[in-house]
Image (cartoon, rainbow, N blue to C red; front, side, top):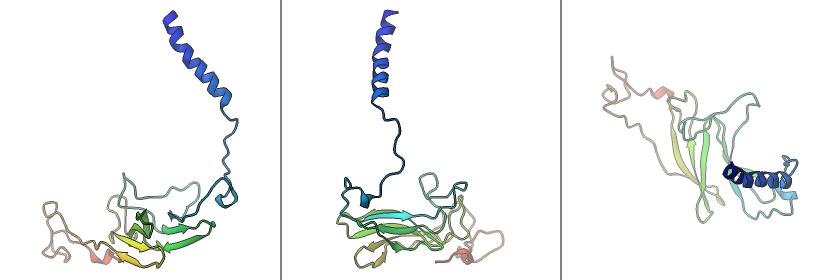
Amino acid sequence: MQLRTLLVLPFAVALIALAQDSPERIGTDPKHASTDSSVKIDYDIAYVRFPRKGDAVGTNWAEIANPVFMDAGADLMLLHPDGSEEVLVKGGVGSVTDPMVSFDGDWIYYSHFHDMKGGSLQQGPPAGADIFKIHVKSKKIVRLTKQEFTPNLGAANWSKDFRTPEAGKNHLDLSLIHI
C-alpha cells in the first residue's frame, strides 16, 4: 500500500502544478503577422491556396493515403512580408500541390495535376501530373517531367499500340486526356 502511494504522489503533485500554471483560455484569434510586433518576417512564404466548399463539405487533397487525386483549383501562392499575396501558378481545372523551395530561395518546385476532369480516388486524373519549377523573380516556369503512359504488360491484355480499341483488349482512352 505504501509503495503505491509513493508512486502516485509525484503524478498528483505534477497535475496540481500544471492545473495552476495553465491559462484559462487559449487565444483562437491570432493577430495578423503585419500587426504583431513580435513577428519578424522578412521573406516570402510559398503555399498552396485551396478553395473551400463550406464547413459541411470535405475536400480531397493529394496525401500519403491518396497521392494521385485532389479537387481542382489549388493555386501556388506567394505571401510577401507586407501581407500581400501573389498567384504564381493558377490551378484552374487542375491543381498545384507539394511546393518545395530551392536552397537558394530562387526557385519553387511543385507538382501540377493538369486536369482533374474524369478523375477519381481510385484511378487519379486521366491527364496525370508533372513536376515543374518556377523562378520566383522572373516567373519563368520550367517543366521537369513529361509523363508517359507506360503500362504494366503483365497486368492487362493490351491492344497493339495501347491506345487503339481492340475487341477483348484494354486500351488508354485518349479522349479523357486534356493536357
